[in-house]
Amino acid sequence: VQLQACGGGLVQAGGSLRLSCAASGRTFSSYAMGWFRQAPGKEREFVGGISWSGESTYYGDSVKGRFTISRDNAKNTVYLQMNSLKPEDTAVYYCAAAIRGSSSYVPRRKYEYDYWGQGTLVTVSS
Image (tube, rainbow, N blue to C red; front, side, top):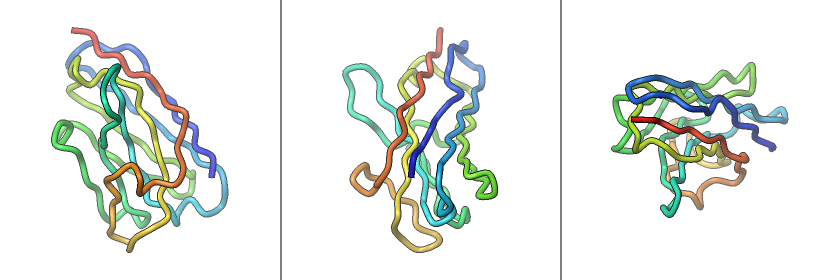
């Protein structure tokens, strides 16, 4: 599976962005999908994820209530809608795919993910 993330950019605090991650291959619907981010000098952290069925989502505490993950299996794409952005959301955002779990399982740890995209930069100005 190859993943291509896009949609990053520069936005003012309080604004919104939607990231997209397009996957190659015919088995996209079999993968749980996740978003991670990495700010300069910091560890890569879990932002949120969605189970392969789409029935479950899970978010990191820092983005809960502001970010929403969705997927369109017909388009082999997962989205990350980011609202009420804050300067501390500035980071490179990565999408990832995981082959595991039940239809309701959302992987939350980096080692659970099998494939990674190249990242897209989000910069939030104050």
